[in-house]
Each structure stands twice: as structure tokens, then as C-alpha cells.
Image (cartoon, rainbow, N blue to C red; front, side, top):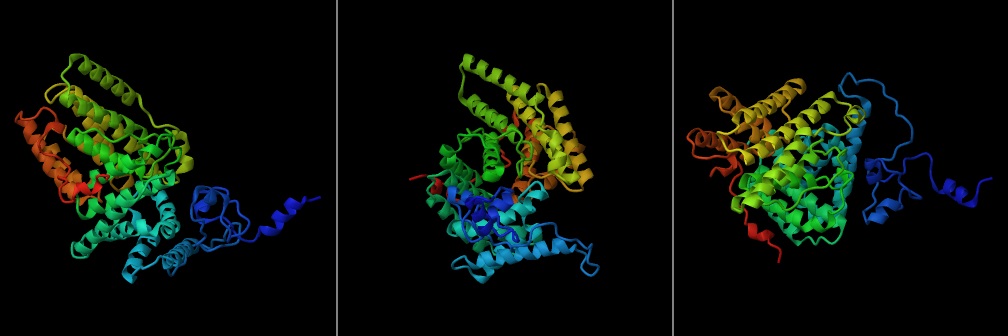
Length: 477
């Protein structure tokens, strides 16, 4: 006999349709709600907007009938793209005061598979992020809309490779509005913290592409504002997908300028990040190296200096023995062999980069150079091998690439290294690529002439001077 409660569940749940909301569907979580129009328990508990904008379909496997000879795309994949565009279109219609050209930009960002190519290390994350955009925008439109529009403009610019296709003043206008939204955002809950990091991450991406300066101030602002809500280790980067990006950008800047970073990141060692893959645990070591580098600038006490050297020894031992966790699960998690190759290559390059940073904090140019050169060559070979296997350059390796590049001493290898800048310095940052080439040439010259003892002591920096955006707009009142 069925209990009254069970009979009620049978009546209220329609077995002929998918009833998961879009967020639970994306996260592959069980979605508990009575009908497709009612909010689910998870979204209600987290205070999120519970939406189902994707087309509802019958359960079970869909039949595949091979490729369409006229179009060359599998019917299932084509229907998925059509449904994605349809869902995005319906979602964007709900946004207030959205102009026609703005809608087209957001449609490009949320429904074109190639639009997020520069956002992520691995292709498997792109579809999920587009679905997140579709479900996220209606709930937080006033805050994120301008940042995503600016981002869409810069992405189209990157893909077109033409300076004539983007109205720079219009793009900067959207960036300015997004900066105002970021500064006015009150971070009172963990959900606010995720929103702040998302806005800061998207804004950083757009600024790096369109302007090239001011990003470290945004990273510091966001990481400081969200710090009270980041005490517990993250178990899933999908909960806050932009945090690692902000930490990476700020730590890289702090290493270059020998500043103290705002904070590090705590996350499960088994998590795979959308941009850093398996390398997130190494970020903590880069963070500690930046703090030691900053301390060495002003400390003269022999006892403190001795303790810092011991800390460098400990970090060296930890990084040298570090290996990515749960390698056996990669085959189950990633179907693409190219993604697995990139994951492992990126992990090795970041490990070698951390060893090189610690090495130069302990030894100046001219001391223990052979070991530095060995690690540098290993990193460059790893990058090139991954490129040959996957037929595309490894992404999100700007920091370890620059750290390895400064150690190149042979003239013929230096010329080849300069050509590699366009491959391994992030494609979303054209200004940084140009600045990196100038930086390497000048540091190599200073090293050869004995004018500097460490690359981070050079007066020339690979990051552009941050004076084009008024940093005072991020000072908390």
C-alpha cells in the first residue's frame, strides 16, 4: 500500500518531463521541487533565482541518426545549440532596458561555443559557464550586465584581430559602469562574495583586453572585500569560479613588484580549476614566495633573514616533491586526450616556475645559474611538447613562462623565446604580451651587463604601469 505522502509525490511529479532547474541541472545535483514552476529547495535555501529556461524534454536517451550530410553537424548537437540560443534569447528578453546591440553581444557570449575560448583552459567547462550566464543574468542584471557586455566586445575584438571592429570609447564606457557597480556592491553574505569575485573577474578580463592597466587594483579590492567569507576551504571551484583567477593575477603582480598579496586561496587538492587545472595548490606556494620577497626588501636583522631562508628551504622541498592528486581520475573526468595532456603539462610548468622563483630569492644572477637554466629548459620543453601534441599553445601559463624566460642566456634561444611570447602570454592580454617582450629584452641586457642581480629587482616590469585607471575609485570609504 502506498502512503498518503507517497501518493501525493506521485501526483505532483510529472514523470514525462525533466523537472530540474537550470542551476541543479548544470551542477548535476538532485533538484527537489513539486512542479517545474515552483522554486527548488536548493535555490530557495541559497537565496538564488530558480529558473528553467532551457527547453524541457522527455526523459531517457535521445536517438542519434548520424551526421546530416547537408550541414555536417550531428542532429543532437545542432539541437543543443539551437536550444541554447533559444534559452538565451528568452532569458535576455527579461532584462530591463537592454538595447538591441547589447542583446546581440550577450547572445554571442551565451550561445556561441567559441565565445568563451579565451576564458577557460579546457573546452569542457565552456558549455557549463554559458549555462551559468543564462541563469545568472536575470537575477543580477544591474550588476553584471555592463561587465559582460564589455567582455563580449573585447572577445569579439580578440577573435577578429582587427582594431577597427571595436568602438573603444563605448567599451570603456561599459567598463566604467561596471567599475561603479563593483565599488557600490555591499558584500554581506557568501553569495555576495561570489558575485563580487565574478564581477571583478569579468571586469579584469575586459580591462586587460581593452586597456591593459588597472587590473591588480581590482583584484586586491575584490579579494579584500570577500576575505571574511573565504575562511573555509573550497571543495568545488564551480561555487566561486573567478576567485582563483583574481588570486593568480594579484600574486603575479606582487611577485613582479615585490608587494605583499592580499590573501591566498584554500581549496581541495583534488579540485580541477577552470583555468589553473591541477595547479591551484601551488598558488599557496607562489603566495608565500611573494610574502618572503616583500619581507626581504626591508628586513636586515640576521635572525629574521635566517628564518626566511629556512622558509624558502621548506617551500623548495614541498614544491620539488609536489605531484597533482588523483591522476587516475582524469581519464574519467576528461574525455579529451588533449585536455589531459594540457592538465599535466600546466602542472609541471607551474611547479618548475615556483622552484625558479624560490631559487632566485636565494641566489642572485651569477650564482647557481646552472640549476636555474635546467629548470628553465624543462619548462620550455614541456610547453613546446604540449603544443606539438595538442596543436595549440598551453593557456594560463603567463607567470611560469615569464619566470622561466628570464633565465634563458643563449642568444639563439632568446630569439626563440621572444617568438614564444605570443603563444604563452595570455591571448586575452595583448598589452601584456607587448610589455613582456620589452621586459625580457631589458632584463637580459641588465643581466649581461651586471646591472641587476634578480629579475624582480629590474626597473623594467612586464606589467604596464597602473595609471590609466584611477586607483582611488577602489579605496573603500
